[in-house]
Image (tube, rainbow, N blue to C red):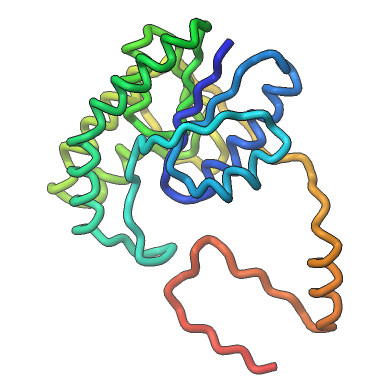
Length: 223
């Protein structure tokens, strides 16, 4: 079996979640071949999937939204990027379709959660499983009339899937396909590097972790 993951290039959360999923698939089926297809930074993919024997394909399946920070979206830039991807997507899908067929293995497409994965699955006539807590259809529908065609196209693609694994804290995701609610997806614990632990403990100060891309706020800390 070849498991081909169409992974969103929007942020690192999708990749971190799928690293845990593919690690479990490998544990259960160590002879299955695992492919991760995305433009997420290769260094992060290597870190996230470090213990899982995956092959990487550098393909952009979606745009998502272009964000100024964790809360603000650059609408003009997002619209421009969506149109640019639309112009080259069909050729990319054709290339990947041919490549997968050359592997001569039964294939499962896992999408987290680029709508265009539906087109790849249709070309291959293989099963498509979505996994996520939102779809770009609902995101684009909230951004105004300029994004309406992308919202409708995303919804149509999502509705072509065979199954939805719906993560906690989800949006509606009303795609009219079979679905199952699943609990939080977490990776196995990994030990932090000794050098890192030694350094942060040497400060003897409270430690605050700021993540998720920042909130566009300037924070001043007096020590």
